[in-house]
Amino acid sequence: MAKHRVYTMSFGSVYPLYVAKAEKKGRAKAEVDQVIHWLTGYDQATLDARISDKTDFETFFADAPAMNPERVKITGKICGVQIEEIEEETMREIRYLDKLVDELARGRPMSKILRS
Image 1 (cartoon, helix red, strand yellow):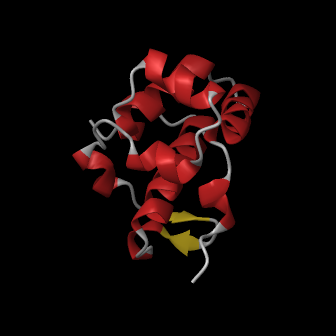
Image 2 (cartoon, one colour):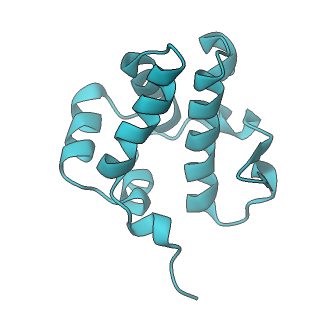
Image 3 (cartoon, one colour):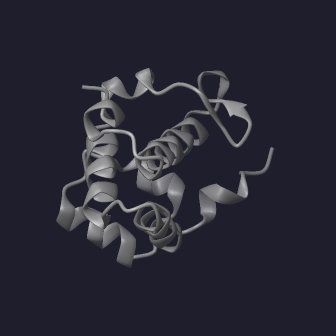
C-alpha cells in the first residue's frame, strides 16, 4: 500500500496554516507552538529547525523527542473520522495535532487542550 500523501508533505508548509487558523480566531502563534511542544516534546529551537528544513510529517513525528503519553486522552472526530479508531500510528499523531489546533481555534482553554 502506498504512503498517504500527507506523510510526504513538509511540516513547514502546513505549520503556517495552523498558525493562521489560530490567529484568525484570536489565538497566538505562541499557543500553537505550546500545543506542538506538549504533543511532541520538541523545544522551540528544534521546532523552528523542523519548520525551516522542510521535514516531512512522517519524519517530524518519527523523530519527536517525547510524544506526550496524555495524547491518548484526545478524542472526537476530525475530518469525519473518530480519532480513537485510526489504526495507522502516524496518521493518528497527525490527527491529534489537527484536533489540538482545532480546539485552540475554537477558544477552548489551554488547560483543557493540554489535558491537564
